[in-house]
Image (tube, rainbow, N blue to C red; front, top):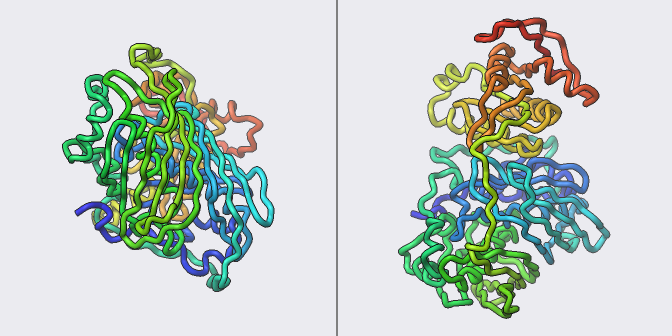
Length: 506
């Protein structure tokens, strides 16, 4: 049984949801007031931060979201953030219908333990239209793409019913298995295959089932036509792809669009070549209902400049043949032998602020709750913490069972993140303890080591339930940042000769 054959997880917006202002809707999605929508459960896309005209979304850079070229597809993150920002401009009883979207691509997104981040903000809004811009970054803060989008303000008819009073969080059921994006990746295409095989032959192998990408199984994607410079792709109109009741969200259509468009470019590659996507412009014409019938995308090569840059056009149709969206994109063919790959040092010594968190009395709580309930709570803990880490530009190094090890470029961001995680855990009924220290560390892609890491761990062990403890180093470096500290006196830390003055973050 495929993922899309499973019962849908998450909840479409309740009927009264659109009676709230767009800003209130965005805030409700960023908190526990309403459960995540199905696409959040499917792909891990979350609303991490909301303020007037500004929305931040996060998405895991997971192996399960990797396409044929070994890159994470971040279209749903980018367009979802645009939609969220545009929604903040809507009033009660209004909706925003996405009309256009464009992107300029800078670098690929590779699978990693961290999260991708999309920050979208409204540039202009009127009673008829709104325009927003978006920037996408990886977990290291490197810019992946920027773009923008235009939406039409639509007054709902009939008006939505009023919300319940008082507004209380809507409970969501628990599941015995992880969400789809969290499951082990079923298949992947070795990068070395592109060095020895033409792109069209790789996609023919995907079409026949000899090769599979992770996205195929996750979204039910199926190739029905493949030639050099041409690709036909379809996926079912599943309820997993909805946010609004009975409507497929445009952000999920971007996966179909990206796979077809960039896949078409990949079919034109000879062995030893790389395809680089440069930009894409999308126009949306009609909405698609989740009736299970196929949505198809047909992409073809339109123009080649002769210098390796070419244009691809893609059209998306619903099951009745109605035109849903059109796309014009450009990309470039690059000989791998000409690419300059910067040498990456195995490790680098840098100044970091290290944050450790863990759940108070986790063992006793797990025994009292049982395995299934504890696993669900731990999953919600990790999701909430990772949203705050993404907002504060932290880099998750690893999980520590019932906690996390995170590094930051600045103590101010680490302090902000620790406080935000503590507040998020309070909403879940979970108490954490946290500790942090700033110092030089040896940093690799997978880990961080050094005395500063040991000190942060020992400081966390001294924290009381619900407390965030920081060293004097953190306190002194964060001066002027608006944080308040209470003196907890000198402490003898395990394995450290000299006593350390610790401070509680208020």
